[in-house]
Length: 324
Image (tube, rainbow, N blue to C red; front, top):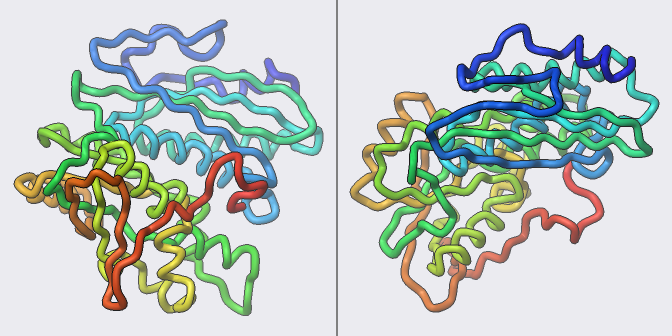
């Protein structure tokens, strides 16, 4: 279908955000706000970040937007809008294109987000690029640089499930784990949880997209501190542990794309954090502590000893192929 026909098919019939002045259908998007505004952009390239061999286009759309929502969550912001730029190869059918947008809309509806614009062109390789916007109360941004000596380290959910789901799809056996596959295709970013923590005076957050080993090192570097992680406390689902007992521990640290949150908080505000997690039925696990250090680093402690945890997850531009 031509671009204008596509616009007619995907244009919203209403907007969830009352701040929209002008949405889809003009040269640009217009909105007004008295709050701080957060912007994030994420790009997925076919056969690098996803494959239609392992995901239908509905899941591709959902997960592409999930990456952006998770980034907004890591800033503590409330998701509001998104725009989509597509480069599509000629083999895409009209049904696949609509399913891509339907996948985005499925997640957008959960977070009251509005589609407010974008662009679609043809090309030799499929690219899905999304820019998402969110709101923050003034001076309530949650930054990687906010970890301090004495903080406790926490993580939401369980880790490594997405990597396990990819393994199920790439190397299917006689039976597959629907739970792990769903965690890979349809992750649940913790945006509502993060946006509900405005009562906390200080909070450091990072989303787990490239693996906790990478995200923890980002916090250590940005804050100039040492993170101490207790390996035995890193949460792993029973499903992953049972199906991949030899790989579960490694995948929990470096698998990535779980789109959970890693963070630090002052000990005196642990209970407020736990209360919000209980309210939303979110699993929250305390996995370590922060100490002052002249050498920013992450130490992984286990019964076998202590090692320096290197950023072993996916590194952008240094690997030719990401998880599909």
